[in-house]
Image (cartoon, rainbow over all chains, first blue to last red; front, side, top):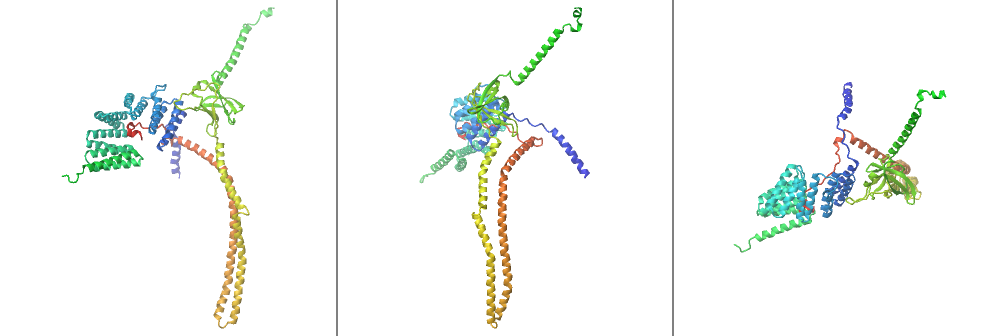
Length: 297
Length: 328
């Protein structure tokens, strides 16, 4: 019994010493900053439950709290988040106003990373409203703010590629997407890598290169399925259907369009489902149109 | 005259020394007064604002006024007015740019047993220009919901339930209630069972006599029937005795059921009387548990395994620049 109790006693004596070598507790955030984080987390919870209005309300509260203690990082993070939520609600003017906290000249200094994110978000908002000139201008400002280790450099290149694609400048679009792909792979940003591959796939379709399009879009589809992004999966499948139709494989094209329709219906995207249905019907008409009429040799 | 002229050398310049001593004493007293005044903040510029509260329970003169946890002033005066109690706050003027006119005051306690203080909550929408308070401004007061009020809410919600249960028990105990009538009916049936038993015995006895009489008349021809009758005569009393015992047991059981029901009703009544106390104690237990968990979270064994809360930024996705992506 004595032989057992001695090691036990030694272990009990050593336990307080073990506490001494433990690292000191991380200093808790200041009360003002903790309140900002709390509001930010509540907004995140609303967002995950699909309650965009609730999320916007909590982000506004987080910004108010951050402004009351001049927490520049808190203001920037929550203002950018709020602009994303407003854009999803279709309130583009409000989204722009929330970015104004960073982009309009003020007394507080924000990091160049946050300024780059805000400028990119502003560019995205302008491009959505077809204000291409303003969008490109803000895109250039975002690139100017973006330093060496900037986390949004891939996104900036992707938006440049998308703008060039919309303008029909296929070579510039491909160059932007390739730069975005390289940057996103270097930083491990899989979402932007998939976006770049999708742009490259669209460029290849426009150029008539069905093989390259299928390869790029197939890779994008695999990433988007991993990231569980239904709208992106839908667009990948539509692109793959077009690539299949381009090389004359109408059965494969129909299969991709059917999958796109199923995805959009499950995602309650009525516009997407209608477009997929239209493409399926158009494919059917084309098949019938290409059938030889009776009596034709 | 010669004695006055021969003043000892140690008294030479005594007036100057005494004056210097008195002057230093006066300066010392003045210095102490100034130091106390400085510590009391009389050299700091203050701005006086006020609010009206329905009552001043928990609010004291001199109580700290805090903004985001920082002490920025104190309660300077309390006075009864037409709108309840006028509470005057004296705020250090350096902090007034942080206190907009839309601010609200509320009584807050540091923890459940900590010191109470007045907390100022800045109001207004983000992005809107905020006008700071000036001397003599009135701000809004948010009455605090204390633990007592929360318990009162709980009590208000539980009172109807407890009342219904009490009513149910009273109904059960009323002599004219359906339950009592059912029990009385069952009891009456049980009490009639011995009479029924007696009548059955009498009937069996009559039957026995009849059989004996018939046996006498037809003894020769019904000998076998006589033997059966005799056997029946032997067995029936045993059976009737057993039946009587069973019926007596049933009566006892019904009495026990009635007593048990009454005891259970009383026990339930006592248990319901203890519910509010138990709820209070469970509330304290939960708070103690939260304190223990909070302390455990900060201990060196657990704190490294608990995620520290941090700000979450949504990803800035270029996909949202496309018309297809922006709607999602």
